[in-house]
Length: 458
Image (cartoon, rainbow, N blue to C red; front, side, top):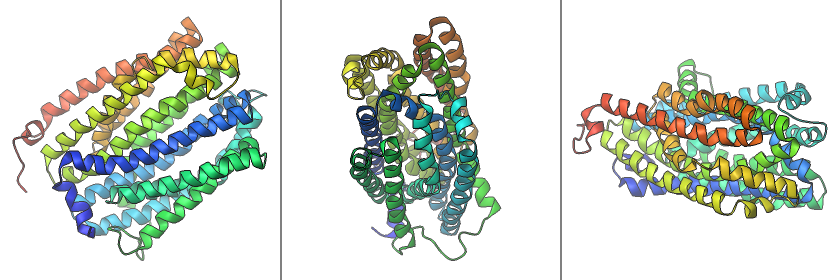
């Protein structure tokens, strides 16, 4: 396919086929990544112990905070490039690519230096005990040392997908996972590095993935590639990237806050094992969320391009397809969590207490999960077409407006069960708000956005 063909098809190809073509690589990559995270926790739980799983769960707020900065740049750049390609503005797309590298290097190094300087205090603030602190510290020291590699890989992989090369983006992800799967058991069990081995394997695999994407962007076959002068900071482009990526940033910052609150409430009412149970539940939750996110990443370049090209009917059509697909995924997660939670929990640990806590929590946490697909897709749609404020509202509604109050109120009344129950309660409330906002935006949209029979002139 030619350079122009890789992007022009976004405005003319069949929506269902395009969504599958762009989503499948992202789904395969993200599902494989989530599966690896699950397998990694199984390795740690079976090979290091239940306390190590709890220590790993303590690191989730810091991991989310690191991802927040990477997502702000990566998602913002990917959406901006999609829109610029739809507008046939290749020059801006090149500068977006270069400025993405600049931002990722500066932000990731600064983040690592600050967090490493206060690591023990931060981990204790997030709920680490004397038993779990050593595991959490060992893991994060390695992860933070390789943070610049992680950010560069995430950002460039997002741009590769958004600029018309989803299969190459998938191949990069599968490459990192393959390296990780080989190195992790070798380092955890063979070299007996324990949880430090799991972190080292992760960083090594991402170095491999980064090399892959860098080779793509120096080649002439790419529709967007590195050119002389593209790395020079440009205020206008940086502002565009950050403003559009702010929704993803705030979402992950809120996830950091939420994870820390959840950990602290679980430590208070259930101890370290309750935190470990959340680590297990969150692994399963994120697996299905990543599949949905794969669909939204497939939707993003299609919606962004057609929005830039003023083809409203195609934006509406890809949204409808994505909601149906995402809802099927979340319904599957709901059924598994309600029917076989004990079987899932036992795969992670031999501890009876941890298994019981995980089983009970999983059933409650997934109670409203079928609604989550629609809520995630709608928030990502507004991000994909550059409507940042609406995307931020919908992305943060579950995490800030509803989940935080529910965590404090319900845990105070019901203890650990209240922590679990706060999550489906916020899922329900956020979905209702999303329906209201979507209905209001459809009323304000042009006739071409409301009626698929009315086609805009180009």
